[in-house]
Image (cartoon, rainbow, N blue to C red; front, side, top):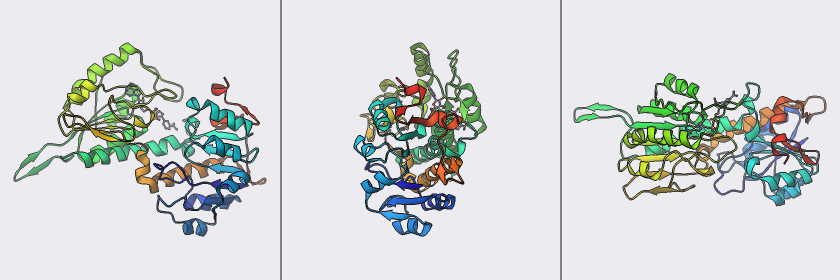
Length: 375
Ligand code: NAD
């Protein structure tokens, strides 16, 4: 089977879907690997390092798309490039399937087996291919490093002959994979951390990392079988906003990571709360790219309110550590291919009865096969 990894085309994308280590692993399985020239230019992997690992480096993007059996890429493709895929090929990428109905239709008419990285089940068996987690973990780290960099004060407490400097107060809103890493990173830098999540078990995890859990009685909040939060009622959301407003006002840094699977992220911090923060304080919104948790934040930009509160709504936080982000993402791709690899046929086996594939294969055999997207 021929695997092709094209270069990402979005200018903000710095990562590569395959790195040399993943190429080596795939070649070890018996696959032929082709990467587009320049694929690793923004994550410190020159073409030569891919060649050393055994890949062919090609300039013929459309030719490779048209002949590959498996295409690995990070961002969703254009309709035009879906039309270039070989009939029956397997395409693995983030797909945003809840918002890309037309794209799913194109994959189906092209007879592509489209696999959505977002839909990989959150199970122990699938953990090694869980790209959402591998990337969110790094995004949580980058959020804190970015905030520390923008703040005109320091994170740790310092007792000096010239007086004592108090530690930064950091509030982490949303304690999933990114939030936990944000807490751990902020603690390592010496900050005093408070955290909140609608899932009670997440509060305990935050405490085990040394954060103070903010407890708000919202009544029944529930969760999905995958461990995701459910959307709050408007009353619950209002109660949460009021209860956390004081913590925000007293924080030097607020990091928001709250998402609700398949829906727009909830707006958790409204303008009046941002206005109540001290000049120089920093808000980093990890959900900005998909709509944002913070009112007034501009996706992809850094702005400052009149009062001097810095709002960081950068997209692709994990892309700022592109080498490590590519390392773990490429490992996710290679692990998935290895998991479904048939040794004898030297091919990726599609099995729609498999629990992992049932979760993440969206189109196959000319139609949308995932029940959540069939209508
Ligand atoms: P996510 O990115 O969907 O959301 C981030 C966090 O925001 C979640 O913790 C969620 O509870 C929280 N949130 C939602 N609404 C909120 C609100 N109004 N206020 C505050 N917080 C709010 O979540 P994620 O990081 O992808 O993780 C989701 C779950 O999946 C977690 O339980 C995690 O432990 C679990 N998980 C399991 C596995 C596995 O078993 N293989 C792997 C990764 C993650």
